[in-house]
Image: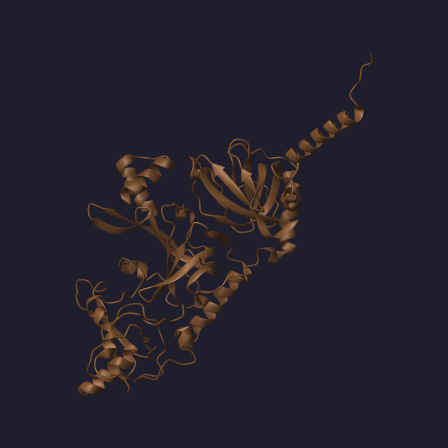
Length: 485
């Protein structure tokens, strides 16, 4: 009887697998290679292209998506689904192109799409500035992250690669507000100026800065933990892709947030689809914001260019929109644009992604340069869609006075503007011309559902109607202007 000993080559294969497993735990796998290691744990390092808004998962965790690239996979990007116990443990990427280290994430595939999954129990991450520097300290890391000396080599390598391949984060496919169209899948670039909260309390509503609201809640409850702050805030507050600047963020009602975004250009004009007779009792809004903004906020809005309202269209799904900072240029991926009451607005969707841009980004610098050049030009203050010249339905006594933009509703005096005291037929024709109503017989124009009012030139002066409320009661009047026709 003979004994059969294990073959040496099998032992070598097992040792080889152990060595490869140890190498994968200690080193970083290129994204292109990792995409073939389905159901394996890998370490990844990449540049962040974009992130999703944090939200509650179907279970008890919180979730966000981070899309990354590296030298081996510079286009398209790999999606990483990150799950943590609380929202404040999710990564908050400060700028597009920042570096993220991901340890022990599991490669998965679903319907031929490969992605990585971050497990809260054994995975970890760390975020680093993507700019070329000698600093290797993360600005955010997961609780179980352990820094390794060899990390510096990979971080420096990615930073140098980005310097020589700046188009890896190219934003040229993102469009302006002047190119807005109805539907989803539009690209835009915009900027965040300030975060505001509109809350309702004992039947009253008011605007309040976030730090003021925190002080108010602290006065009632004392210092709160982050999760208690979110709870207290909820007590008191009862498909378009693009690059733009977010101007305002506030909560209109519980779980309903709204942004004001701007990029220095004008949205295209649209026809007014409403019956004129209905507008007598229900006039069209002059702005898409559902509440009247206080004067101090209005005065701080940009004077030139459209300020677009962006709301949430996520059904019962709650997004952590509060992660949006202020005074930052942002790329939005996959917003939906629509017309409401003949005014443009956009919506955030559950699949919307975003990415902050640095102020020195070449696209940001280009947008600001174009806005500066426009604001310096006398003709730049005219709506872009009115160029090379608006309609010739009006004439003023001061043709050399520079143009300005209109930010408030105007009250038109009748005598001079309409040619003193014209006949009824002449007055009716001029009114229809001003309202964009086509020439017709009888009173059928009252039932027209589509109008296209012209851009006009006019002179304005302002005056208060209450000396005790000089700014709140200020009205505007057209003067030294005649409506032709």
